[in-house]
Length: 543
Image (tube, rainbow, N blue to C red; front, side, top):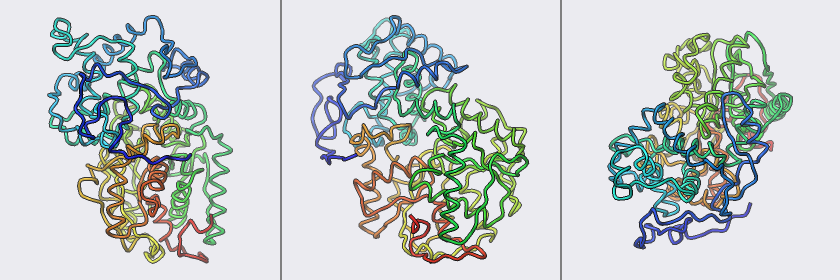
C-alpha cells in the first residue's frame, strides 16, 4: 500500500489542538470530539467473525452488525450505557489494579512525552495521562462520592455516545507497550487501562477486525491466519526443502509426535511470511545442529496471543490451548520462538489465569544440562535463553564471518524486554554471531525501548499513516545509528516487530532491513556435512 509522506510535526491526526506544533488549546479536552475519517481508524469487526466469537463458551462479543465509525449512528444496544457502567463495576471488583490506577494518578505528566503515539501525532489525547483520563473521568462521575456530587468540577463526566466514540479512537491508538509505566512515579500501567477500555467497548459490539479475526482464527484452527493443520505442516516442510537446497543439510521435523521431549511453539508468521520465514529456518537449522528431540503441533500452531488485545477470558483460553496440547503430546517442557505478546501473557498472567503447569517438568536443556528455574511455573523458555545457554556452554560451532554482510543494531521488543526482562540474552547471542553491532541511544533501548508502533493488532494497512507516525520515535533511533555507524540490519525477537518494522524501515530508513535474531544464528551455524554454496547473504540468498 502506498504511503504519502507528511510532516509529522506540523499536522495532527486528530482534530484536536496539537501541543507538538506549539498551538494553545482553546477548549477543554472534554469538549473536543473524536472525528473519524478514512485513515485514522481501523476497519470494524466483520459480523460473521463477531457472531462466531460470541458463540464460544465463556466469552461474549455481542451486537454483531455492519456499522461505520464515520456514521453518527453506531447501532448500539438500547441499554448500552447501563452495559458499560456495569462493565466498569465488574472490572473494578475483579481487578484491584484498575481501582488503584483510577485513584492514584496525580496527573503530573511524567508520562506525557514518553508515548510514541503522542510524539508521532502531537494529539494531546495520546498522552498516556490523558488517555487514562478518558476512562477515569467516567469512573469519577459514577463511582466516587465527590464525582457524583460535583461532576465536571472535579474531572467527572457522564457516559455519552461522544465519550464512547472517543474511547474507540484512542483505545486503538495505544499499542499497550508500557513504556509510559517505566516513567510513572506511581507505577500506573496505562496498558491495563487500554485493555479495560477495549473490553468495555466489546461489551456493546465495538471492535476492530484485525484484532478479532486473528482471535477467531486462533480459536478455530490454532493460528491467527486460519491455516489448516495440513497447510501449516506443508509450509514448514517447504522451508526444510529450501534449507536443503541452500546448505545441503536435510532437516526432518516431526509434527504432533507423542513422547517428544520438547514442544516447540512459535508465531505462525514465522512459517509463512517474510522475514519471519528466515527466522524459522534459523530455528530448524539450530535444532538439527544440536539433535534436539522436539515436535511441532499443528493444533497449537500460534505463539502469539491476540486475546491479550480483546478480553481476559479469550487471553486465558488461547494460552490454555498451548498447554492442553503439551499435555496431550506428553512432552516434558515447551520451547517458545521469537514472539512478543506470547511472553507477556506467560510471564504476567499465566499463573492467575491458567495456573502453574505442574504436569510438565521444569525445563532442563538436554544438550547442556542447564535447569531454567525462572520457568519453574510456566515450564516454557524463550529461544534466546535456550540459544544463549548453548553458546555459553560451547555447544555451537559458529562462524561470525558468515554474517560479514551484517552491521546490526538491536531492537528490544516491548513485551520480552519490559514484561519478562529479556535484555542480556539476545545481546549475548548477537555478540557471538555477528562481528559488528551497535546499540541505539540509551533512552531508546532496554526497559526504555520504543515500540514498533503497530503492536496490539494495529498492524493493518488502512491506518498506515498513523502507523508511520507512531513508529517515528523508533525509526529516529535507527536512523541515528544508520547515519553514524552505517547500520544496515535491525535485529529483534518478535514476529510482529519483524512484520511492522520492515514497513517502518522501508518508509523512514530504507537502508536498513529487519531480521530475527535466530536468522542470524542460522547464518553463522557451521553444521557437519553441510555444503553451503554462497554464504555472503545468509539464509536469504535462496529467495
